[in-house]
Length: 163
Ligand code: ADP
Image (cartoon, rainbow, N blue to C red; front, side, top):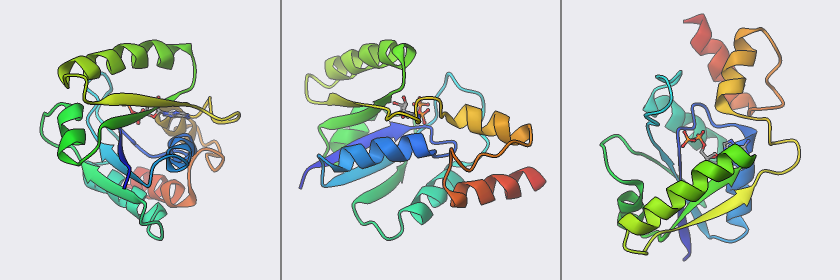
C-alpha cells in the first residue's frame, strides 16, 4: 500500500487542502494528514484536537484518510518515516508557496538522507485564493465562507466565535 504524509497547520482545513488531498489520492492509496504547529504563524483558532476532529468528521466515510497530531517537536521527515511514508505532500498556490516549498523540500531531503521526497500538487483553478487565514478574516468580517470550507468547518467556526 502506498502511503503519504500531508503535513500542515490545517487551522482549519479548507477546500484548498481537500483539493490537494484528493489529488494525492489519485496517486496514493492512503493519505495521513499530520496536524502540526507552524512556528511562523500566530496561535491558532482551533486546538489540535478540534482540528483533528473536524478532519475526521469530514472524512468519516473514507478510510483512505488518517489524521494524526504532531504535538512534540519532531522533524516532519521522522514522523513520515515512523508512519511508513517516504513522501510528503504539499500544495502550491502561487510563486510564494513555490519558493518556500522548494527550500523546505530540499531541507527535508537533506535531513532524511535522501529518504523523504516531497510531492507537490498545483492548486486547482478557484482554489488558489483559499487559505485558512483568509477564511478566519472573512468570517470575522461577516462574509460568507461557504465557498472556502466544508459545512462541518463553517459550523465549527460559528460556534467557536460565539464562545
Ligand atoms: P503550513 O502552516 O504548513 O503552511 P497549511 O495548513 O497552511 O500549513 O498548508 C499545508 C499545505 O497545504 C501547504 O503546502 C500549503 O501550501 C497547502 N495549501 C494550503 N491551502 C491551499 C490551497 N488553497 N490550495 C493548494 N494548496 C494549499
